[in-house]
Image (cartoon, rainbow, N blue to C red; front, side, top):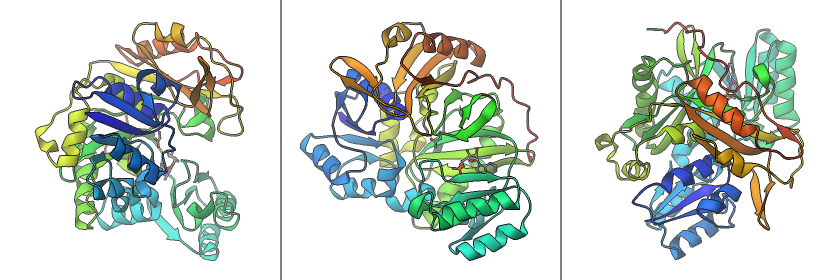
Length: 429
Ligand code: AMP
Ligand code: GLY
């Protein structure tokens, strides 16, 4: 079978790497891909949101399975368009992907079906939102409802900060039309974990846990980024909590989406805060996480392709999912300045030496190949991923590989995986 992966980040390199290992697969294409996917698959120079061109490519090249990485094409309806033409594609429909595309929609579903999440209010009027926060002098989180590349969330300590956030999002339109509506919610305290699941619309098959490190700087300081590193599994998520998350969050959500006439197939990603009152949903994403996918996929022992097919065919109940008994840590190497302004086009050295170390896979994100050289081409450049018997061992190997890699203007966190044994939070049960 010929497989097309859509996207060009670290997540997509990891997907291509994993799909390549399937005996069912004869060729893998990646649109648009990066220098890492170019080395192991065929890059196709079509951006991830050009659905017409992607459709034409898939039809002409007899693609038997398309896997979508980023949220934007999902929300734009790529799955619906491919299916209309009889093509097999893994991911939710546009109406199901609204779970990520609109935070207001997502929160309203959680409320309607009694799923655990922070108390909230939604506003389309700047005046009403401003009045609300002026009266609430306590920590709040102000969120642009639409897609804002992970940046439309502002954590506020007091009424002044909340008012500034409402003004920035709704009046100054800092995140464009994503801020036409805002969600304002209670501030939750705890450890954050990512739980991803395969689903065919009825069955959910949970993956092992993962933990992102969103802040730019060590010690969770500085601005939020797309993610500066990830571990899987994370000691912050006790295994006993799995069943609770499946039965009280994932399954009820899948049933809710079905009841709403929006059956959900694909990856369901729950961003959870493990609070003193149990796990609470921060957000749902309609796709694999980046960088969580990198450590997850190096640990996944099962062939991923039959799982994609079972989600499309509605036969996931017959599948199981095996994991290697190791911990994986992914350290994101970024361009200096990210998530703000950064330069591109720097020559990267040491990639082969890093990849030659035992138990290490260097996933590319913002890279491109130029005349045999690999250049930086984005904010998050590489996801250096290693496995070990525990988080500390995996982190040691990952950082040994990081130390082999050089370019002019590197930034990475030195503390990925260092949270170690997290303070266990009291479960609500
Ligand atoms: P979201 O895109 O909604 O997951 O928000 C982005 C990030 O903001 C999350 O990963 C959390 O770190 C933080 N965050 C979001 N909602 C809350 C909340 N209610 N309380 C505390 N932190 C939050
Ligand atoms: N790592 C966060 C995300 O993929 O949204």
